[in-house]
Length: 146
Image 1 (spheres, rainbow, N blue to C red):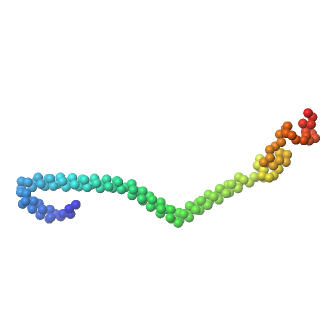
Image 2 (cartoon, helix red, strand yellow):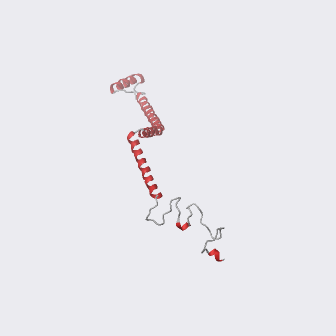
């Protein structure tokens, strides 16, 4: 703290012996060492409080700097773009598989605009004719016998 060497301390003690005398010197040295220890303890406490107060903002600044460094890294940007492109390509392939009916699957939904023979020529978006509708009876229709 004071950056004193051994020879300087000896000179100060001899000067204090001459000024204070042999009776008061031990008490003065004790008080000085107690004061020095108290100052050192206060200095250490202040340093630890300052360090703990600045630790959280410094950590946040380091994290932000790391995020910026990672965001500006061309190799990571390229890798992320390629990964995103692969995901989109896989999604497109999966969508194509879902929307294309398989010819071997007899339960596949008819494509819009084609007639379904079980619906009497109705397109998939037209409602089926229900019995009792105002339709003309055709030969062999059960409504003809009533």
